[in-house]
Length: 527
View: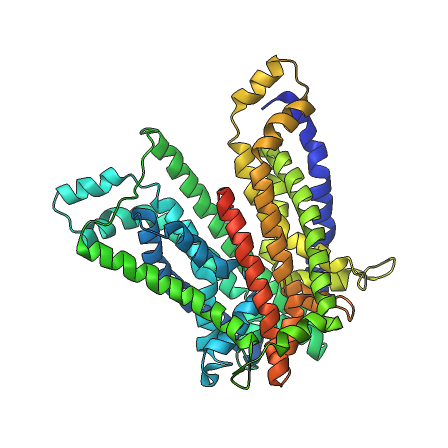
């Protein structure tokens, strides 16, 4: 690395480190400290807590198993076969993961029969729908790296397709499957929006229990202890993900020693069985993704089973809903600016500074470990006392959105910076360019697409963020997800239709963001 870049690393790390220490580490430590002050550790031994932890755990495990069961066939066809609409299918299955959890919950309220509302089955089905795209992306990325000669060699030796998959492909996919499983489990274990919309008092997870105790029962001590419990569990799982990724990276480096030839596994389906398999999986997947989204849009224009656009007209004319829309857009813009800037600074510090600055990457990943709900609770109890009484400040909500978005921004930009050819910088340096000129004309130009991708993802995070916002909302800064949740909790066909109309707007926005990300073709973030 160029010496001038390395010298800049300490300055680049200043803002990310201070921001994370002030708004993530300090609230987290405050949660630990305040939870130890109370004599409420007995809460961990109560039957209610045991029920909450048990339900949180078993629904996350079952959801993860079902996600893998659904994701593997989709990853198989997108990694191995050429077919019309392949890229569209990859984008389509990714849409649910970027949707606000409230929208997914609303979709399943509409598409499932009333007898399944407030049930475990509804929550698990929504979790599967929400996380399949994440698993497909992780597994298919690894599957595409498996050399097709291995399959050909197994077939030449007389192995059937199933035997080749079990003895050759599956062992090579093991690390990716484990990584996907851990990440999906974390997403289901920390689920908040889906459970709050689809669950009931008997279907509470640790996340919803934290909110319920802090905001409705006033049992802050109990909420803090539940938060500590969740942080410890998620922290242990994140360590497992990290160790799995490191093992995967070592395997990739060893594989590269055997050649750098460019190859593609993609081929046209040959046999009738392959064609039927591809058509069936692609068709079923597309219908399964689109059906809940269509149901949301349909519900927004139906009143008493008749076509009616009153909900849309009222949404456009209602000052409260319009205020929520403007608030969401304003917060999204602030989130894009702040999180992209801090994420870029942090990524540059980590890449340019070398191994000494890995702690910056760890710090910026803490919001993932803590979860948005715990983060919101930590901000409330940390910044509501003198001399720093920021609890009621409007900036706290977009700031929470930024904290959730920064880990994603970092993991989009860092790989692109790390893979940038050093020869370009060397040539520019030989021609007399300063460090700033080199960075502006080489590094910045190459990472522009990653910056656009990270900005798009940051805007999606802000538009859909629900966990921390539930704690930080005030009467004048309600966002669209909060408005949807409020409307869904109220009776009346028109009010319900308004919620679905707003959800439709968010679906269109998130679909557009996925299209931008896939169009740019940048690599997925690593963890």
